Image (tube, rainbow, N blue to C red):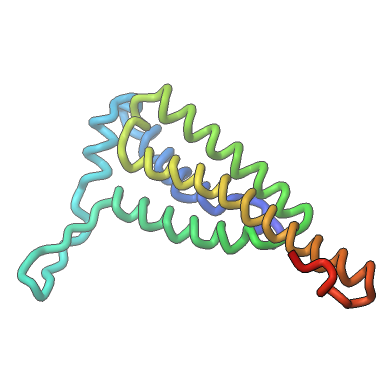
Length: 155
């Protein structure tokens, strides 16, 4: 179960996109990937009379947003697993950025948004962990130094 705390969950939608991008006969063509991402999977009529169309690209972005939420919640944890998670999140962002800039199959808005989510995960992870560590340091320092009288250390 420790693997779920270390690995970035955003790697799931990125991996699914990589499977689509590297499969097929024209792996470097962004139009091939766009055609696969824009296929209609589901078409639902709404009460307004409009039709809601869901594509694989929409599902990947939705999955990425859900995973980003859980990544930000995971960022509040402290310890060695959190440090490894931040390092792997940074590595995932770098890999996504390289793929986006160097490979044509990744030059789509769907992958750009997934790359942006990995960047936000990396930044939010470091910021949330730093803020939590700062809070723990202040509370821990006040309790240890004065036996629980934290009013002296109030900012």
